[in-house]
Length: 475
Image (spheres, rainbow, N blue to C red):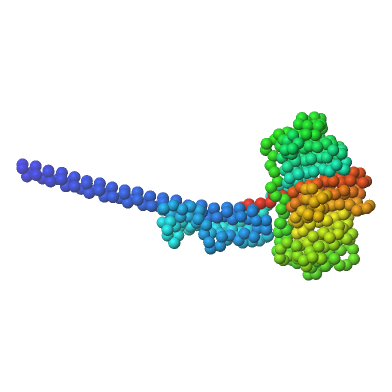
């Protein structure tokens, strides 16, 4: 009986020992499993951090492109940029930016790396992505567009436009009579004139007909006060007025690089600027047989002294047939104002990118000409200060009996557009105008007032261009 009791005690001890071993092994297995899961989770988090770093690099590259008018940013190269650092790890990125299939596309390759610990010289985790970015816009120009002020001089009688968009304010001088438009949008105010978005004298008038089907009233949207009465801040049978609106977006940039419309297939003209200066009028730009050879020239920077005389092309009163989009490094008629005529023999919209200023006494377009857009990059010349208080990088004056009738021409300047006593021979007089500032001081009824062509395809003139991501690939 004693042996039976001892056997029972021995069996209990063996059972307890076996159970303890089993529990110990189980706890050890669980500990290993937990540690493995923690390690795996930490690795995933750090790998994800490497991906975030790579994405930060791509975002930074796009931001740099948007702050570089000529989009020359090529990335960080081999120099890493630190995104985050701590005692445990450090995350960095490096990027390269190359031109894509067109001048308005960039391919961004970005590598994000995580170093553990932060002092390590070899990355533990790496992620690389490839992003495509394209320069595009969702905004287009208006008949009259100013990033700052639209000022109308005292000699002006009537102005007619389809759409008017102004970041700052409109000031119409006392002798102006009628200011006619289908849509007027003004974001800012003249702080010296009762916080007027639209102020001065004259009268706002609705057009006799509208371009938009169903529209019967002129729409006036202002960030502050419409100080021309009627209608003032209250709508009536002719106007819908939204005053003191706090949600009017402003135009950030009018910059249109020639690369937006001229890809790598465009080349220098074989004869250089002689296309503009030699041969009988009319002169073809480009000259016969040189399709897409319309860089004049495409080298160096700013205005080339090899184009014209010291960078100045004297156009005289010749006719120029614009047969393609053009990039020109020269001032037009800087020394002596000219009276050229332009013709686009197609229905396409052609752009003339001018790395200089424009100085016209008058300008005309041939009847039936297709649309032409002058994009003027030059600074406001000091020589125009006395007659152009808001700048005159694109200037239009008048001499004797010369008049302007150019409904196929749109003037877009990065700085000021100035009309100084300009006379118009017919209506419509111009396709439209855009600039940092617009100053309209035209002659009243000589024989026509300023009328902008409501049919000019302003929807083909992009503004507020910016780089946007279009594709994403992890490599």
